Amino acid sequence: MNDNNLSIEDSASRSGSENHKKRKFRWASLQPFAILFGIALLSVILYLVGFKTVVETISRVGWGFLIIVFIHGVRHLLRAFCFYLAAPSGTGKFGVWDAMTTRLAGETVGVLTFTGVMASETTKTALLKKKLTIAESLATIVVDNMTYGVSVIIFILSGAFLMFDVLVGGHLTLKIVLVFIIILMFAGLISFILMCAYKFKPMTSLLKRQGHKKGFPKFISRKKSYITELENDVLHYYENHRTKFYLLLLINLLTHLSSVVEVYLVFQLLGATPFITTSYVIESLTKVVNFMFSFIPGNLGVSEGGAAVIFLSLGYASATGVALALVRRGAVLFWTFIGLLILMARGLTGVVKKDKTEPV
Image (cartoon, rainbow, N blue to C red; front, side, top):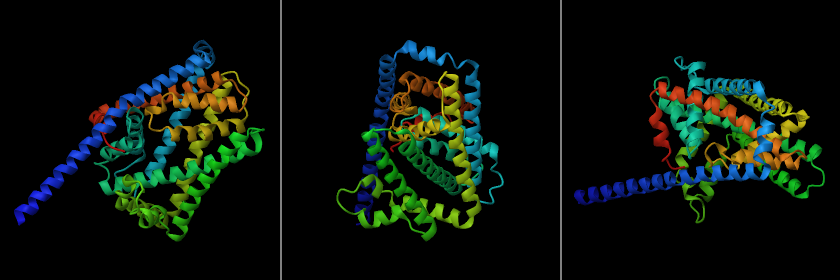
């Protein structure tokens, strides 16, 4: 009888392992197609807008590109400080420099791989193993991502309201899209407020009520315990480090404002006449577009295409939008290269190859 049970368990284990390998193969096989799609999309955009026009527009930036690289680095530093503050108390070995190098390395893997955020967080956990326990690393990553996510919601919400009230004329379709964005962001913000104020766990509650029903996404219901643990980590941090929690939100909002300044400066360098409100709206809508197409490695082609559409909607030349996106991508690539050097120095280049095949 025991032998039969062992046989069944072994068979189930092998089956689970085989299914995991199949999922890994499936996601790994999609990586080249996602990259090719991004390259093709970027090529089409450059063709439609005019490659020569875009190059001429970018050439106006000149040495001003170094300013954009610097602002991008400041943003990384602010996010690294948030990562440092998100760590549980009593982790004296973990400093701001550790947070900065970990962030740059993690973001590099996220940019270079199909799985994006998952690969990035896996790398961060691996880099922190000598500084924090796995539980501490996961709690730090969860709190950091959650507070950043809330700040993104606030930023996008304010940008949508600003565009709806100030910059949209008779664009009925755009107004409908903005209303949808506002409703979605409000739902996310209210859920978070309820979670913190009343210890309400929105995802755990949803899984209890709907997780067992037919049609509910299985990839979510399978992670019920993990999702509950994540929500518990956020609640625990909020209850015990409330001042730090709001400080994290404030710093994250400052990172978004630095992005607005970056857009404003690139606008000027490209020879356009910008308004700070326009730059604010452009950045908030860019975040929406990049999130929707986050499955494309580095948002290749998506950032440029999104910028072209956004700029046309606001009455600017699409070439200016594409040029702005490419200048910002140049700054991203600079810091991605720094992150790659950190990965090589820490001996974790294999993480990139490994995480390309991890399932989302």
